[in-house]
Image 1 (cartoon, one colour):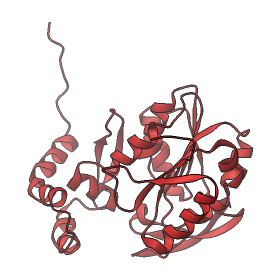
Image 2 (tube, helix red, strand yellow):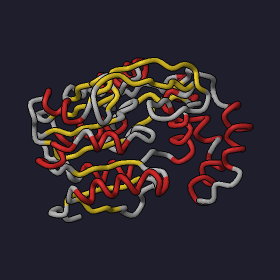
Image 3 (cartoon, helix red, strand yellow):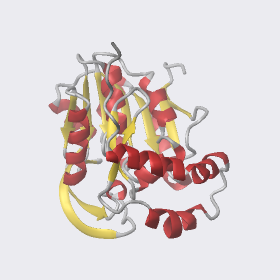
Image 4 (tube, helix red, strand yellow):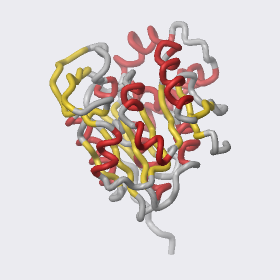
Length: 282
């Protein structure tokens, strides 16, 4: 007897229809790297045609986990147009995860990388995910629970060079909110707790950490400045984002002094970099 399969929901059919309708735009975005005119097209034609906030769709990650993405957030529109988001970078970093160990995800957002780390590190391991925005942290928890990622611990705090508090700037697009820059479409600013990687590491019992991902909209240097003890002992593989030489040069100087070399494997976005301890080969 053939097993019955449930019919796709309205939401699934709705997403399929939008996905099909956008294929010409998606082809243009993925095959032509020149960005001239793309922002204008997005703002004036495509975004107004997408379902309004907080409408979302289910996005399946490369290994089967699913997350809810919102159509009109940058993250959701990027996935709609490109079919994924930094899959190459996350897959590369996962190569350095030690199963049963610990991974740090600084700037976990809604969980795209945390879920991949959770699967790779296994049920005996642990992922510590930092997300300061209360609403985004709640969405992160929902995505983790939906996928049974019980080995991920959420720390609802910003991360920097020293503990305290910091002003967090909330954008109307939650995925662009930041504690280091004023985002476009600022909604409000409010204080959130601020910790360091080293303090969080000590609170977790100084476990062996194999990877450290940092994506905090310009605050990557401060995060590294607060991670000196972890870097010196464990030399984790580091994936980070830096926009231009002004951000990258001091980061590169700090990590070079700590015994790291810079790598940018094929398929990485120009702003993303992998740093490995000199004793680690790619």
